[in-house]
Length: 125
Image 1 (cartoon, rainbow, N blue to C red):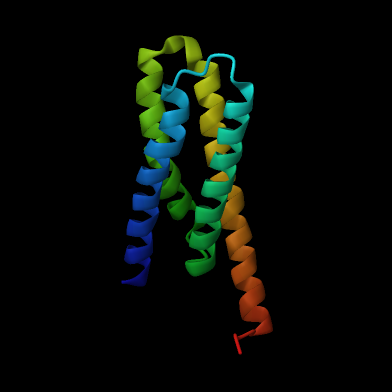
Image 2 (image 1 turned 180 degrees about the vertical axis):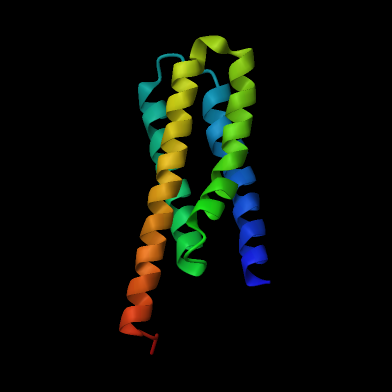
């Protein structure tokens, strides 16, 4: 039961992050605002890294499923949008690569933290 709750949470987090962060970056008019693009790239790394770390910590051992559920909405949204704006395919693929890499690294970090937590047996006082 716990893993299905985590799977649902991963999918919902993926939908929210995929639409409001990743799709917003790809869909919005970028112009010459390289600082804004860099800030949103950092936001993607932070949010997907944090969500991945939380999923990896609370449900270790299911990293690839959690990563897929977290990244899939962004992949679908950007993939569908890439058919409409074919001139931005390289940019869109770089956003997706960043999303997938951030999710994977976050999940690995969460699994490592979970393992360290179990190993030391630390409890809050």
